[in-house]
Image 1 (cartoon, helix red, strand yellow):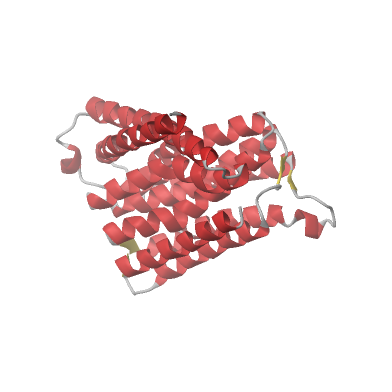
Image 2 (tube, rainbow, N blue to C red):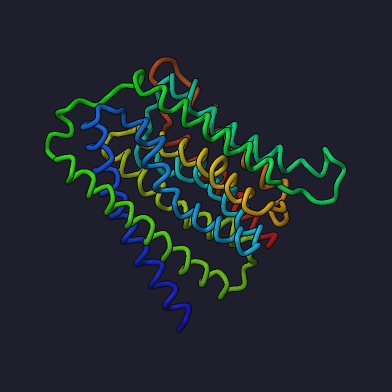
Length: 322
């Protein structure tokens, strides 16, 4: 009976989160047109941070309770799913067009966020110590890097392509704002239900906490990004879809992980070097696939399918070695 309730909770979360993503992307696009801000910037900031709220809540609460594996595993797993799963699934459904400027200036931040995690994971090797720990000093440095990223994001406001006023003429600013807030609430509550339901199902069939953090919890907390990216791509707003990915990856590492490790130094623990290496692999692969072409680049369905195949292989390996 308990597992049936978990399944129902999981399905209810999916329904709420899909509708929430629809409202969120509609509201964000209309707000962008009202303020004359590009959809890429809205994706990099408001949508990315809003849809990453579940990761923030789960990781910070885990850190406060001393559960380092859950806090760090959620962040690493979420970024792996963001980079390969979300972009791969979105591209399979709707091929994503990418500007050359995005590849040059925005996507490298995804690689940088992965490199930062990798460097912190190398502490035992660099310092000849037994266990890797992300210290408060490293957490504060991450928060400084987040501030730099935000400064860069606001600096590109005037250089990014902006939507025309006509695109947002059908909604008033108040209606757009309310739609965005309602969508954000749907994403957060839906993600919470998905995580609770999926975690209950996973534990009912005997999966360990470490695997739950890297798979079930990270996928559940990343479902808002998935739903928001698919809805944005469906409506032809690939700037919002790409900005959502880049912003979420940076937010997860520099802000969420920075905040968690500032509150309580996090031991690397259950997150292995293989997990970190796969995160780096996914980041570089995403950059390479986005770099093919000349002026107007496209992440094709076949490339998206390859990304999905890669993350499926990774999850299969995790479950096999659980």
